[in-house]
Length: 198
Image (cartoon, rainbow, N blue to C red; front, side, top):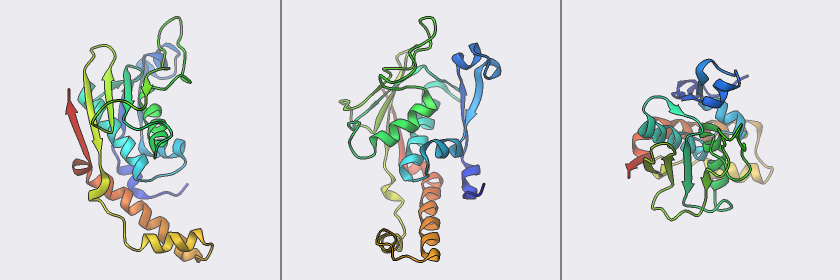
């Protein structure tokens, strides 16, 4: 399996999942989620997927420290579910945090429920709000990748691809340029992610 080398340089998100522990999945429920695992679940790597990963990582560290408790977070988004890329972001955040809308896991013996922990159209001045269920502590996260512009060569290449007029080399170059921007988003995470404790 070939993929961009920088995927392996992205810091994995450390989690402890009580449900995984109870069900004998991982010892003590301890595991990590890497960027490449999120890419596989999303089916692609883009600034939106990278942003959802970075938002989750930054928020969970602010709320829990180095290892977050999966299933112990409620997430609210400013956008509606059908607006823009909210659904893509929500899927990535759900994969990492366990929080889902009404479709999620209903629980085991009255515990470990993951449904109804993700909300859209929230009245917030941020991209997303993450809240610990046990302490009530919340953080707002803003993701703005505008400081990491795309290569000017990307749009003409995309137009040729969409028109079915691109050569194999042009298609490959478009993918390289696309992933180079994603890489720069990660390299500039301090400039694209802002966390505000509430």
